[in-house]
Length: 311
Ligand code: NDP
Image 1: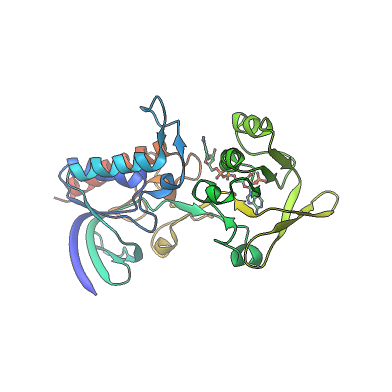
Image 2: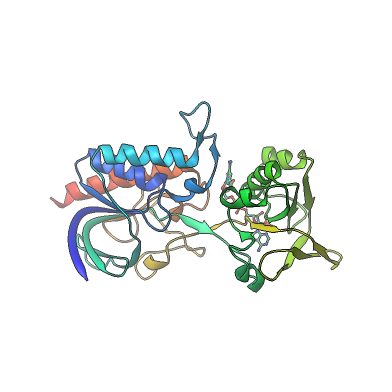
């Protein structure tokens, strides 16, 4: 195992991580970032970002993340590929993080911005056909189903946004909604309800995704009548929310029942001195790029103050 000591270590490269990096680098804290399993974070698998202030015409998610990367590197961010695979936060000012199981970094401060990942239904058929017709990212994979019929599970803003995206590529999109109503904001609900090639099936649960080497249909059940129906589709998309990427911290950090890191109100301080949490890893309520960026800024400022207090 190789070893290294750094001042400030940032884990994760979404809007939270890069904003923390910009602030930390400009404050002369010489931050080192490990980008994690999905460099650029969740915005790299989205298309139009229309609600980030400062872009009157909107911007593509990957383009925005590229801009953030360049901005952070301009101020001297040491930006690296690699994934944190273990931590030991038992010694203040000497927190240990293992990268890819082979490199041990000791940092005075760790800023966690590891984000969240897509949730799955947990059906064996969903797992078996993952990548062969089953996907959790319409924007990444929708292109493969041009002119075809697809289904999407979920009733939140993500499901509505992805259903609408798919409706522009596919012949027909069937939305499978488990309750008798959406969770999504009214504007997003209206968007899918007014799209002619989106059919919405309420009170509908997925029983099984069917197909041998690819998806050929999905078996669903009406939760009120109990009736089962087979819908012919070649693509099956899952958009039922996300879970925070915080598993490696669970022995040291206080997490809530859903696994989000608990931070002190109005700050990014965790229960461990010198470990700060930002972005979706600690936010189950807002989960927006702009709020993630805001907490990334807070984490860098909290880190700077903490280091100044130690001197
Ligand atoms: P949400 O948690 O808001 O919604 C998840 C949806 O999946 C719910 O409708 C839920 O159903 C459904 N679901 C969960 N588990 C299952 C299951 N096992 N079977 C079937 N359905 C299931 O997640 P989102 O990813 O949609 O959104 C996350 C956050 O991001 C929200 O705050 C949202 O507003 C925001 N967002 C905003 C966007 C925008 O403003 N442009 C775009 C995308 C997201 P139920 O309702 O029954 O619980």
